Image 1 (cartoon, rainbow, N blue to C red):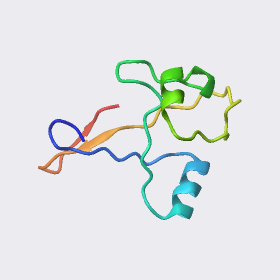
Image 2: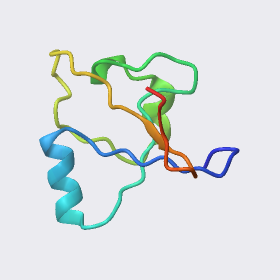
Image 3: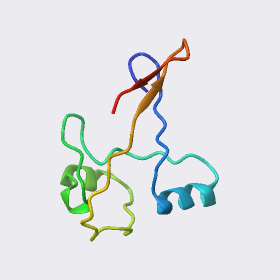
Length: 87
């Protein structure tokens, strides 16, 4: 949760992730693929070792993928109903 009390929800644009969410039937909590202030990795092999050492599980899906994908968008819905695109 952010300092202002807001909470971010990521809706993936990836078939594997969407199928996983649909089968599980609930939100899944996960870490970002990068530490705050560090660049987003484009591929699994670019993920920080610090992240990989601290998570309980990583999927094997697309570990060898080297086809660039766009990062997910992050938007904020403000109390007044306006939308702010953060990324």
